[in-house]
Length: 117
Image (cartoon, rainbow, N blue to C red; front, top):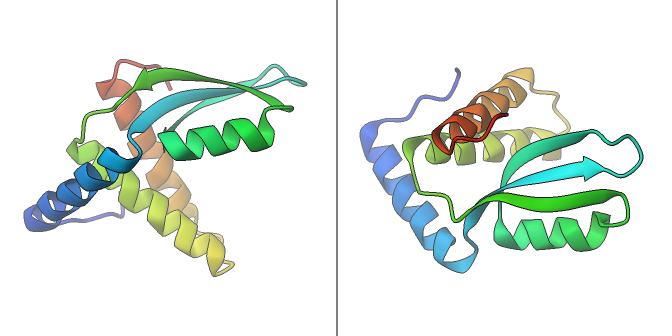
C-alpha cells in the first residue's frame, strides 16, 4: 500500500483518533439499498452515521454492525486513507491508489473486528 507512517506518526495519530473518539466514536455500519437490495459495510464515526441515516434513510437501511471500535494501527491507516481520498476528491483527482488504500484498510478493520467485508 502507498501509505507509509513512522512509529511516531502512528502514535500521534492514535492520540488524535482517541480524542476524536470521545466526541464521535467509530463504528462499522451496513448500508443496504432499498431498491437493489445490495449493501456495503463501512467504517465511519457515530455523527456521520446519524447524518447518513437522516439524509439517505429513504434510499438505504442503515444498521450498526460493531459499535465503539478500538483505536488500532489499522484504524490509523484507515483514517489516513480516508483523508487522502477526501483530499483527492476535493481537488478533482481520480486517485486509484487512494481508493485501493481505503478498501485495503477497511478490510483490515473488518478482519480485526470479525466482520466480513
